[in-house]
Amino acid sequence: MPNPSENRATRYPLLSRPHISLHGLVDHAMYESFRRQLGEAPPEGSLVVAISTLGGDPEVARLMGDELRLLRDYTGRETLFLGKVAVYSAGATFMASFPVDKRFLTRGTRIMIHERILTKTVNISGPLESVVAGLKANLHEVEESVRIEEEGFRDLVAGSKIAFDEVRKRAPSNWYIEAEEARDLGLVLDVI
Image (cartoon, rainbow, N blue to C red; front, side):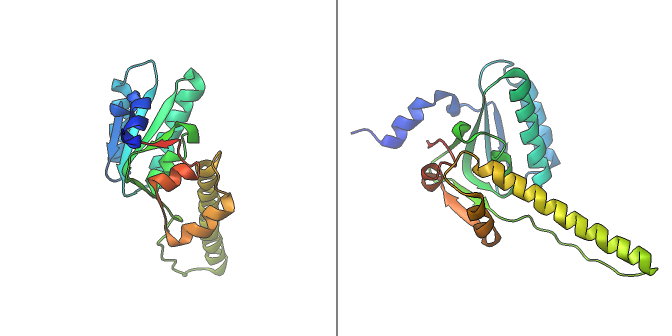
């Protein structure tokens, strides 16, 4: 009897040769590689984007995802996501830019979802009005970061069986999701 995983892989032949392959830290170097590979990809047909990452800059992940969203919106071109081995942190942020029915993982891949991390020292020094303004600016930065994080969590689970509140509950302790569980939760279409 054939291996069911092998049969699933044959259903999605496009995934065997991604047009864009990203790996490593999600940073500006990855963005440059993404832009170069996007420019070299065939101009028509489905576009397959693969990523393996332990995380990085969530704003770079959002930028790459937004470029693909614009491509879909303006051209109608199908974009497919393929997560390999590790889709952690900013990788999950990037994955959120794809509809759930266009997401795939390879066997053994893990997704890791967590809250954004902020490390900052606030020095209080100067005239009191300036101190108050500085403290308010820092608070606004944190509040806006929380809103952006929640937008990303909503995009990640849209169309899946996972409720937004479940992500908010589990993200503070680094939620790891194995490929098959992600498929069963509707977070991805299939595992290959």
